[in-house]
Image (spheres, rainbow, N blue to C red):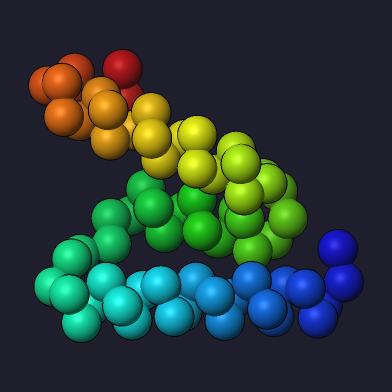
Length: 67
């Protein structure tokens, strides 16, 4: 992955974080770690979305985090 794409991804994450801050929605450490991995090219956008959906489904169902 080239630096230009990493910079674009980092800018997208910053915008998303700013929108969440404006809306009063905190960004968890888990989401930050996924964002960092996506910016670095370690995971795809689809993998990130899947991980987030799984995480929040477990959270909503009362399954302990990390399970």
